[in-house]
Image (tube, each protein chain N blue to C red):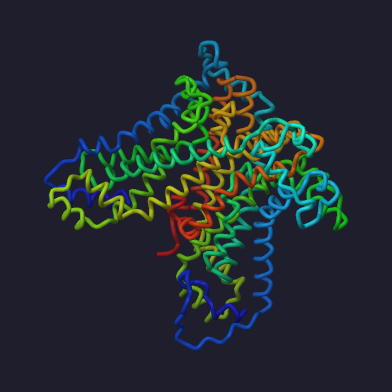
Length: 304
Length: 317
């Protein structure tokens, strides 16, 4: 990509009579303001604030690495890390399997825009809407979900109110919102597999299952890898659904990192420590992305 | 599974007339296909049921919900939920029907959400298009270097910028204003620039050169050639930006404190927090979620094809 641009620009540049530098600078000015003010400056400032103690009112006080020392011995932080990872594993695990299933079903049964549109609907409403609907559907007393459980002879479950269920429930609510979107990404990936592969498989008498594991899955790997990287990064940043349904409770059972950061900053006005926690999340995200990229070899394709 | 061989499922999406060389036999429904459809329908039900349940609950009255939790139709039909949400009931009426009695006015929040999403979308897409034009069709030194600096910002998780951005908005005295909510999103997103640049690069240079020979300026070319020729992609990115901005919760939650700057998502969270814990105002809450969700669903009904088709690899790179 970058290469292609360079050569083309070079070729055209030679026969261009005008140099557009001034105009170009004017055209990128607004975007550059946005880039510096709201991406690069906050990045630096966030890292700086993580070495300070600050309650928003008194002057910022530089305290070196104290926040990080405190973080290492903060049980709530480690709990938040554990809970967040638990959330990500359930969320991504279920979401990927369901989305893959949906994508393959859509490809085999109906590729109509209507079908793809229906599947995508939950993605168009906000996390807050999704959270509230399921708060109601899964309500202990009146929720239709619990009524259903009772009706088939099971015990009611306090989905958002018991420690064991809070995280799995929230993870599944977000699966509901994102599975259609993920399915469409995978569906687009399926379209890149040449039909001849399946024809060859069929001539060899391979079954659908055989072809799924022998053709679809291996050839989908690079795309699946990209989808996973993007959705895992998103998953680690979970906040909205937790904030609306449990606000981190019961006790700390669903206090994911981002909720803990928000509490520290806006409930306890401990901006320095909250910033250090954010840096920790940033580092976790970088490590996870790097590992995933290596493991899934997302950059390479088997289709050549 | 012979039934599946007839439709390979790999033809282009729209299949009005499929010209297969051999005459197609009517696909016999096989066990596998029936199972596949059943699974598909179950997944669709899971996807769509919550929307129906919102509507059903919003049109029921709270007291009847307690008695008929499982009825599939609205119970004791009532507009009460919507009336509470739009502040049309007196405090006494609201409390009598299970509301909190707190004054809520979703017209105001709706207005705020419309303002925020519209202004953010218009500015962000326009400024991103300007930058994309400079990065794709203007010739200047350092173009590729600057572009890669812009791409670097894709590496900065937005979530990390929220706290420092809050501090900045506070320094600027914009806390609790709509402008404060909008400001960080006004200028660009790296994705929008990247997305539009792809399309701008593919527009042929011939038309552009003809215009330049006729004496049009490069600015003119941008406004009267490049933009009109890219209406499709610009519409797509605008719709996606609008939906994203409309649904955003975390950032406006940080910045807004009073009704003046409260957008729908934050108002919803607030409504939920205020509702009586012992007997939540479910009908009011579901009416409120519908008010927040319906504009996006309407947008989707109009632009379904464009939105659905926009989700592919451009969406994740």
